[in-house]
Length: 183
Image (cartoon, rainbow, N blue to C red):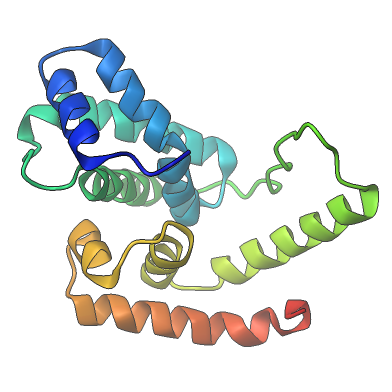
């Protein structure tokens, strides 16, 4: 899905703030995958991540009047999602579940390709679990979601230098853990 036009996004958020359920549904459709990636980076469990993502959108719905329309919506949403996931993790022990299965595609990869992808996913998830939470979240926001260091600093409420340091240390820690998968 292409990146939404900021003007289009602003109009949708404005309609959602005015109580338009369809507009809010559009926001959920646009950002649910990204929100889930952030919650999964914190929680490491698909079911918990789904619950946290749903809680994040409920929180956004409740807090929509507090949103400053002069600022970009997506970083505000991601900050809420990260905070909801961190709070959920603090409140309960996170269950360790099996990795998610690959989403179905119209053209199925070969069994060998599926096995290789599953092994890589397991290895990557295991390596990510070894990172401190602050490194893991910063890395996912930077390398997976494509946010800049200043945007991540705003999302997480930390200095830009701390974000740069977290991404650097996360990569440095992951490098030897994933060395065999470098090809």
